[in-house]
Length: 196
Image (tube, rainbow, N blue to C red; front, side, top):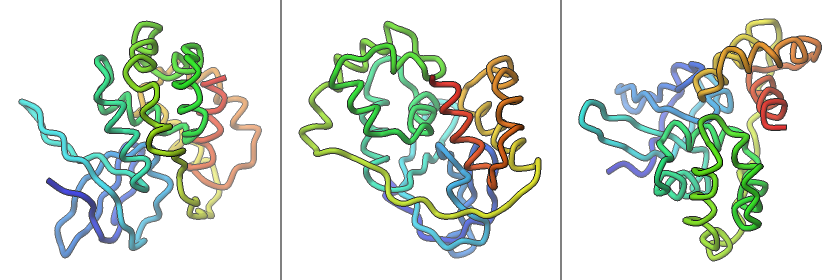
């Protein structure tokens, strides 16, 4: 129904952003909300998913990210939240390479992706990305900020992607030693540690 939203980011939450389009606020679940800045004018590609008890908008930084999301949710056992968790790592070349090279171990690093689901991803999606050309994300916006709030927001975003409190507590001491300047940076660093 919707292809994209052009508007202003009015809220950045660990699991979603709110995009104001001509006075209407759309709650959009995204893989990494900290790629966006509050009061920033932006274009977010979206996919609306309607279920019996809910309607949700899922947002993407660019069309490549959206295409990968749509491919992922076409796999049996992969829901929208799992697909967002996979996209949050933002190593799309690594993801495509893992699918093409039958690297099940790489795929099982993501939350709620077991060996059987990882094998299904390879079976269903192998060859699809090379046919579409290699997909990579666009450039990152720079978010300058500091303080412990960024670390906490990054941890909340990891939790919203499906990582357990136990997993997050294991990596938090390592992240506290790093002087990162944004929730986005903490989220990325956390994802690297969790997917090692």
